[in-house]
Image: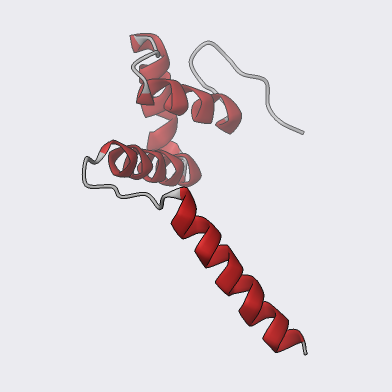
Length: 88
């Protein structure tokens, strides 16, 4: 049974939502304050925020190289070949 949210304290689900909104600068100062408050006493929330920030930095990094569709299809074909060998 989950405790009901109060004006000041939030549950993890709401904290995660605020964290996600903060990534895109869509959260209010009050929401960020409540998130920081929750982070002071919740280890799981701190870990979630840390991973979310890391993911944001990686996605926004200009040096990210993605596979093109041709490389993806080649890799998929190679994977299926190896999988078929191991199953036989």
